[in-house]
Length: 183
Image (cartoon, rainbow, N blue to C red):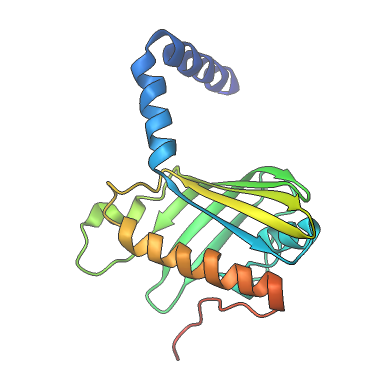
């Protein structure tokens, strides 16, 4: 099975160079993907910690799980409607980079097509962490979250709230605004 995977990966690379439209489509998709940056008073190590072990402080419940090594998986849940996404760590570079791939998705959005439930499947989130003077910049890209998706407006608003507002607040003050289940 691993030989097939390697063969498919090599073929994908070869195809993207032999057929420029594949490469151009990928570049266009990356360019259209949701992207934001924040600057925080925290250290790069603190930012990395928030993006590997601290999600419950600024995003949502992980049932106590964290990303400690490549291949680790976490299911992020959003009760009470039971939306969830499972991400797998693809790249973890302490103090510099966190890259995750969505390997399971179930997103309930009222009045949206059934297909919107799995639109995140195969998308990647990348947080690039960069020290800048006495601050830390975090550049976030959700590759594949593009305006053509049914969920885009809802997800854009969600990331603006959780990444731009909640994570920034958590790293600047120690208090974020993660998703809370309405009881």
